Amino acid sequence: MQPVTTADALDLGREAFRQRAWGDAFARLSEADGQTPLELDDLERLAIAAHLLSRVDDREKILARLHHDAARQGHPARAARAAFWLGFGLIQQGELARGSGWLARAARVLEDAGGEHVEAGYLLLPVALQSFDDDPAGANTVFEQIAGIAERFADPDLETLGRLGRGQALIRLGDRKRGVALLDEAMIAVTGDEVSPMIAGLVYCSVIESCQELFDLRRAQEWTEALTRWCASQPDLVPFRGQCLLQRAELARIHGAWSDADVEARRAHEALMRPPPEPEAGAALYLQAELHRLRGTFAEADAAYRQVSHWGRPTEPGLAQLRFAQGHAEAAANALRRALDEAADRPTRARILDPYVEVALATGAVESARTAADELTSIGEEIGAPVLVAMAARADGAVRLAEGDARAALRELRRSWGVWQDVDAPYEAARTRLLIGLACRALGDQDTATLEFESARQVFEELGAMPDLSRVDEIAGPSVPRTAGGLTGRELEVLRLVASGKTNRAIAADLFISEKTVARHVSNIFTKLDLSSRSAATAYAYEHDLLSSST
Image 1 (tube, rainbow, N blue to C red):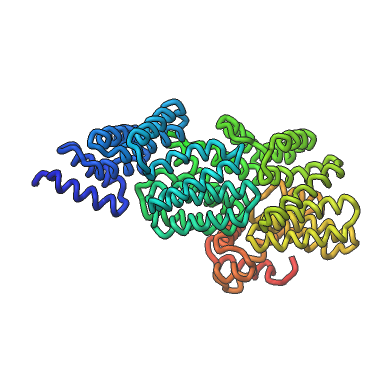
Image 2: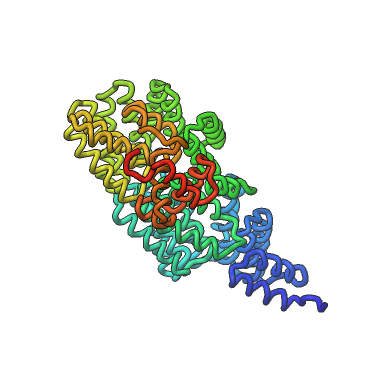
């Protein structure tokens, strides 16, 4: 076999880089570099491949070498850019001293070179980010400078980062409409493949995080699907994959696919824990804790929240909600009040106010619940996201019910339920239907109340939300009698449809649930009745006279 020449290795490495096969690109370019030191362009490709493989030590060494080679060869701007990316990466890893040192070197190199360079815009990024939380107006001004420099030098990477920063700063300043428009424009550049892979990943994750903070599920869903496709097109990609899995897990939780959410959250945690571990690993643990809490596996939830705390991530409102579910309402109320005292931004307050209303009502603090519900309504009106509107309407309805105005409560609760249905959030919709049932019962309409309770019960059964299922039974009484096989009401419905000859897809359409949920019900039916086929299930249904509409 003929040995691979430097030229061959270079050609193969460049082609792999163009195809975004980062592992092959790194291997081939490293091979060529071992034979003959790489020129600046190829050395930069090698650094990018190392970054996208999360080869942190290699990336650092290559960027330092790129800086020195560029300076020695008389390319100060390029040397400054290498120093910038090295410093910026170190700061993101928490190495502030070394990172600041490299940024200072980049600034000095540019100053010594004289003239105008686009790298000056990159060096403004850390300045803007440092003032982002305390002075969003000042950060916006710096991002405007960055955007101006990027436009002057026609640098799409810097231009996109400038739009991203301005959009996020404007959102912090309360100008949601203009801020979101800038985020959308930044994403157009990303999805149009106008920016480099490193910048694309940063923008994807930042924009999706902003959408989550704004409770904008539609945008979060759309951009998460785009990020999923982007990651899938680069099998070797290591950074950003964990964030992608985490966002997918959160959306699956909201849409009621809790088993999928659990799998994705665990995969996200595994990906985020690869050296060097990323801070978002704590968020993946928090999501796992939430799923345990919702399912009623409280010991596992408690352990997961403790792990979340070790990562320095706030455990509220989840841990307080766990304590409430365990019967410690006063402790939950105290924890939520403390969290509200510390919460500065309105989206964070909204996430705490929502459960606080429920806990306050449970402890008899109706006035406190009213104050919290009113603030939540104000935040919902300010941000305007459908999810926030639904949360606020439900909170207001719950408080009105406690205040004795069941008719007004019912109006708000039905409005909330409609929004939860529109955004495909079955768990939240079921929680709202439980309150609707209480309002109907307070108005003397027991039949409608029973229907609402039964609808909520079915959803909780399908999701495996055991604490909520117990609450329905406490409020409405035990569910209707089950069949001899111990089938739930929903399982009985599925059995009847199976016996009628319908496929899982047809059953899903009839019951407005997913095929995956139908498959789970069918599996449960087979297990409970000790059956092995649909024909056996059909025979069972006929033998036990289960095909009538009664139970």
